[in-house]
Amino acid sequence: MNVRPIVFIVVVVCCTVAGWIIGHHTLIRVNNENGQSENGQVTEKTSSVEQKKMLKQGDNSIQNQTSTIMGGNLNENQISTLKGGNLNQNQQISVKQNKKSSGNNGNSLMNTVVNNDKIINSIKNSEGRKTNKKPFFISAVKAKMQPNAKNIQQAIRKAKPVVTDVNVNNGLKVYSHNGNDWTPDNGICQTKDHFIKASLINSWGNTPIYIHSPLDDKWVSGDLMKSGHWEGELVNLVSRLLQQDNDLQFVDLGANIGVFALSIAKLGRSVIAVEPLSINLQRLCKSVESGVSSDGKPFSDKITIIHNALSDTREKVELGKDFQNVGGTYVLKDSNERKVQGSTITGKYKDVVMTAKLDDILQLPNFDFKKVILKIDVEGYETKVFNGGNKFFDTVDVKAVLMEWRWHEGAQDLQQLLDFFLKRNYKAYNPKANPLIQLKPENAQRWPGDVLWKK
Image (cartoon, rainbow, N blue to C red; front, side, top):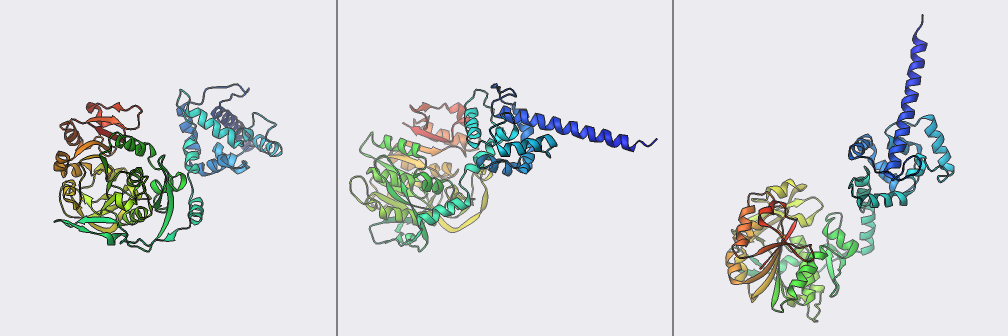
């Protein structure tokens, strides 16, 4: 007897049944992601295990899923991709019906996912549920919601980058330490590069700030171009601390393009801004040249710029690149291992810069700070900076230190950092808590990414 026709029929039947089961369960899963059961009642979201399985099925097509969610109707291929398999006959009919009227069939796959606003609202709502189980496509949606290169380029053209010519004789105070003493270094500000001008927004007044292309610096420059803010919560904290005492001034170690330095100068306080990277300094110089403080004085009267890296020795060093993150620039020699592992390193800058000690600032021309708030963000090099600053802390009344902590959690220098501050009677606080919440030293490996040390 010829069994081949029978085998063929069995295979066809099995495939049809399997296709129906896959389509049916996919429909249920997608509906559950929107918080509905088959009969329209609210249900709990799928378990994290199921979400992971769904993510796995759609792994090869996450871009299609996201583009569908972010804008536009689904086509057959996109729905097939979302399911992780081909459409069967019933599903094709469902798609065609929904093309005519996506609102007629409340339980159809098309109607579940075509409404972008409902899906995005569902995502937002799901983030606030007690279960804390996020839909499997939420990371892809968030990724797609980030500005893409085309949008950034359009924004850059709209901003009209201009050739920047800094007048180095316009009262700017720029110094560098050559290993022996301080020398004027206004020449570092000179450039013919095209700079993008943004507005740094503060409650006590806005000021121009010259930024990098967000294509090269997606975090600091990207946020400034988009919103006029970067770490506004921390800037406001520093300003509140300064306003508690009219004699307090500000020291910014790792000034980058000057978000903190310019904000505090706008407040009317004197600032020392330390930065090793030339392309940051050039923008900072132009911003200083363009700014006026709340008391009517030019920023050149308020801000002294130092062109050095800081360490516990004086030597020439090179600076490492962090991909699309100019603010992540770091000293290559003896670099923090956690910093390197947690970054996307793409070589080094052409800069070769001399290091100075924090103690050397005491000999800076016209230095007269008695009481200061200090902010330090040097990408894991903080311990070396403090090792070179014992005399500074003994001489100047440092009321508070705002520092990045994320690169020191579990690092070998953790205890050394704790000892430096604890022996000087500082207490650690979470700077983003209001009111401030004191942190326990025994939990230092689990402290937040930024820490405020305060007397």
